[in-house]
Image 1 (cartoon, rainbow, N blue to C red):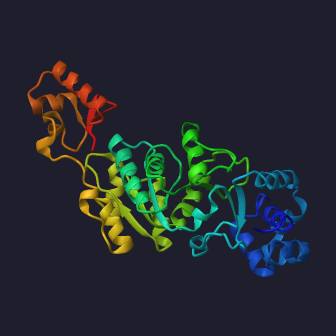
Image 2: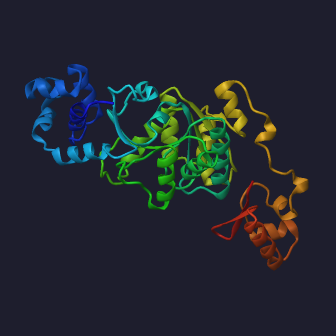
Length: 359
């Protein structure tokens, strides 16, 4: 790892507001290591990035710098720089690699090329289950599952990887000392213990909306491919997919119901050339050319083994009235059986008095 003096110079370069990634890279290209930038002085830096160079020499970031150095002194907390041997080689292939990465957990996981699984925060129960099942299967095969720790699909993907005792990396849009959202705090702690949480943002950075699209390039950049499980046409998940395509990564999408708003983004990606994915076999085949036995992933019982109500539900959410019409059952009888199926994990209730079958 880099010596504290060298790390302090990297921190000083990156902690100054107004000196973004592009300016940092120009300075590093011109002078080499950060120590050389500051040794060259104000006028030399101005010749590279103009008047913004004054910020390098006038802004006092000493308090945050000291706090950041102290943060790295705690077990399992590391800052890696573009100059470190531990820096993820996959990110070096991208157009905008962050100069610093704050990591909690296993730094070595950032060097493993895995699969990013992303999707809607407002995911359906079926979508969350699909993401978790895919993550569990692929993590069980040794692939690192990368996502963004958001509610919905992201959280389900991390949980699936942890359930398989497999590797998972969460890329967050806050400082590494601020785990967000609060509803995923327990999950984040589990990822820190068994995987890695990574951020490019300085310690203390709050959950600003502009940070999350920016962190998406790291999610896709670390991965061999990106799987989108449920997404609206205008969503952060589609930003991640676009970035993945620009970075030369594979883009995969799971199709859904034509009536589902969170399936439209996936359908749009498929129209644009994303690979349609139905089973984990499809991804394993793309990654290795060797698909695992289909039976390993297709454990759903056939229609003959399913209760009539589950068969009548089909694979799209439907209302109680629609289900009553399909089954010719009375509402009170239907509600009783639906409750039993919900408690057994076969059916999920959705807003608007709707129900959805689960795998």
